[in-house]
Length: 57
Image (tube, rainbow, N blue to C red; front, side, top):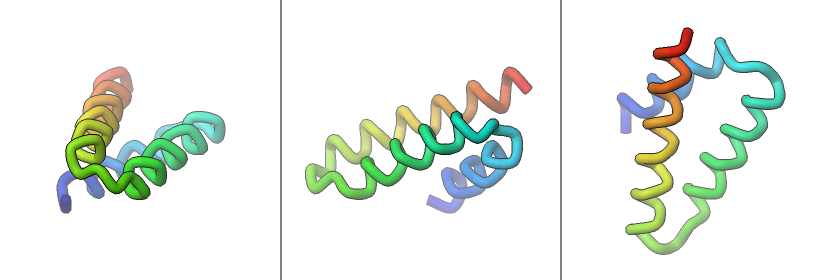
């Protein structure tokens, strides 16, 4: 969890306003999910998206 939060804050500084809102909503939605498997899948997707953003930059 520490690593994903680090990636989140690291990428947060480099994202535009629209991307920030989208990223924040997807993170919030994943936290609200009650199904643990869906939450893990969503979190993995967010981590991959964050890594891709960092790689582009």
